[in-house]
Figure (tube, rainbow, N blue to C red):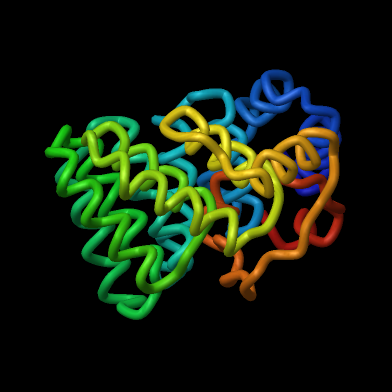
Length: 240
């Protein structure tokens, strides 16, 4: 495949992705020898595409090529660790986790990876709770705060579950995780009048300002989200 053919195929992959046609996009990706592609961004997109199709071996294979080109990219290392966990490659996952800590020791995503590794190895609830509590101390995120609340409830610690749900509501104000937090609290104890009103308002599509400033976005999770459509022309010129 020459550069022009690659450019056309890459553009078609991006167009298919933009329409949500992930299976068809992956079939086109199968026709390309990605070992010849140099652009890390393109390789990461294709890895994400295979991941969406639950083709984790292919996703890992392509992402390893991106890792070889940019070995200090923490997002790539994070995603490789996730893929190794999907494939039950715990030794490799631990290697990627340790590499992530070495490259980015202050990055709070280390606690996300720690939690995922603990969970994948079916370690006890208290170890899982401990990892998410450590994350919350460094970077309070609604997704993982709700997961922590769920673990508290699963462990029979209803008081801590309710307390965490209230913290989510106070910190984030609105959104799907706040709705879930209110519903979780309601399953344990009665909501107060303000919470009942807030839940009804949010379910009707309303929004509130959070009581506190939100933490930074979960950047590492962007790696594993559905890849966005973007122009392939510039990439094609340098990719092969």
